[in-house]
Amino acid sequence: MESWGRAAPGVEQHAERVVEAACDLADVAGPGGWSTAAAEDVLDAIDTLTEALGGADPELAQALAAVAAATGGARRRLGIAVDDQVPEPAAAATVPAARRPPKRRGLGPGFQGIRTGR
Image (cartoon, rainbow, N blue to C red; front, side):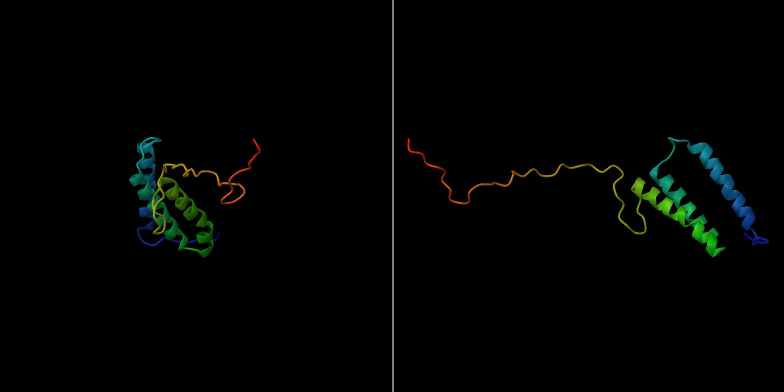
């Protein structure tokens, strides 16, 4: 990739603050420290940063497309709405299918059985 040159005023400082905030969040959160709302905020931030960085170069945007797919998959896994879709429940309750009696097999309507000469 060729050199990009100088960043626009303030971009490098904001990018540095984003990295510091991400590191602070990772230190504080830990494995059991997440909520759905916090995860949604982080996924929104990832998508925003991916879109902003992808806007700098079409080839870079293509390379970052996998990130958008990954955040969409994470949202679905967490039951968060994706692209104005209704969220799927994170832990869907399974309802057993209604049990129907087996379909009757026989000789047809009106069959009275076989009569024997007893």
